[in-house]
Image 1: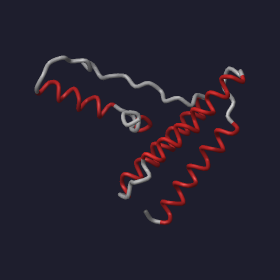
Image 2: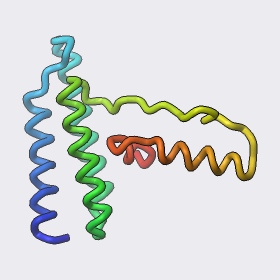
Image 3: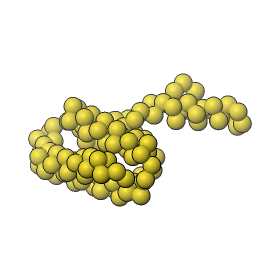
Length: 121
């Protein structure tokens, strides 16, 4: 990993923890604030540890883009949890063979950038 990429990743990691420290839940309840703060910290630790072995610049760039997207969405909607994704039409096809593979391909293409790591956790 190049020094520029390493610095960018560390900067994102620090930014997430700063956001978690100052996070306030929309409901303004202390219990909700504490649970959302712990979710932010735990999710960051899990995903950064999971991806620490990456060496390809392209895959690192994808992870950085996902991280930036999740940060911006969380700050915009004041909700740290990932937003749900919806299946494309006929997303629950039970047929086997070619149609099932097509539906799986459509599901993969329909997944937004901020949810790419959700299957892995």
